Length: 188
Image 1 (cartoon, rainbow, N blue to C red):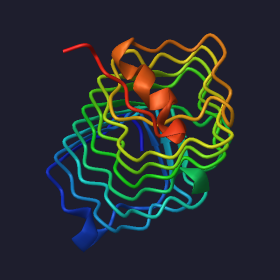
Image 2: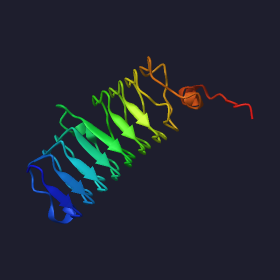
Image 3: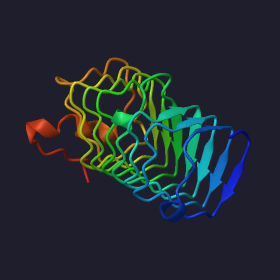
């Protein structure tokens, strides 16, 4: 389908027809728990949708934007790796898995990424703008040139992750020292 608009449709009841979606817009749609395996989304936009627990096995997602979507427990690591590219704005991505994905230059803006899995992920040049990374897992992750200056609640082990030329705020430096179990006093 090309250049179609889907507005407030409950796809968990009727199902989205399987196929390729190019430049389509999905607004206020409910995909909770649906099987989107093998689908293709190119240059699409999802706004205010619930995609929580959807299955994404070999799903192709390219140049797609998600705004204000609820996306709990999604396994982006199961998507087709070919040209995988997306942007997230104001989304809830708690418990999402990006395990071993290549997401160079990805932008997360105003997102919750609590307990997200970024193990062995390539996030070089990524931006986490006003994102909550409480208990997100970074292990053998490439964060070179990533921008985490406005991110909060992260815990990143500099010895176990690549952080060369990454940007952090002074307040966020504590998230780089968690493993040492030290007390940091801000002088107040």
